[in-house]
Image (cartoon, rainbow, N blue to C red; front, side, top):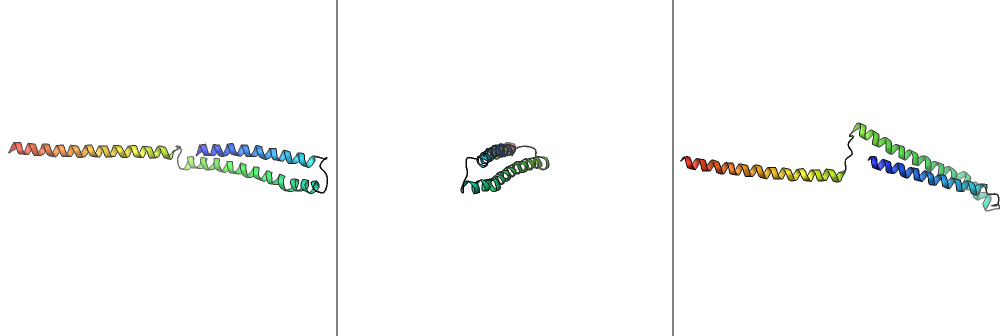
Length: 127
């Protein structure tokens, strides 16, 4: 989970950099005095009133997502468990232990059988 939170943090940083670049391009477009006319004026207004605030909101969302992931991992490790577990490793440990249990059960059964056989041999020798 720490690796996933770190990946979210890296993605958030990349996204925020991209949103910064987008805002810079929008600002350049808005401030370009060479672009004038009936199409450019409303476009510049739209970009400044809609797209820049939207980009800012997306950066905030990205930051909050990163913060939520970090908080989740911190709370999980402090309240539940501090050991990072991988499902594949747990499954392998379970398989290994299951094989050991089976092997020990077989050994135990063989010992019981040999003990029983020995007991019968002793009993028949005593008669």
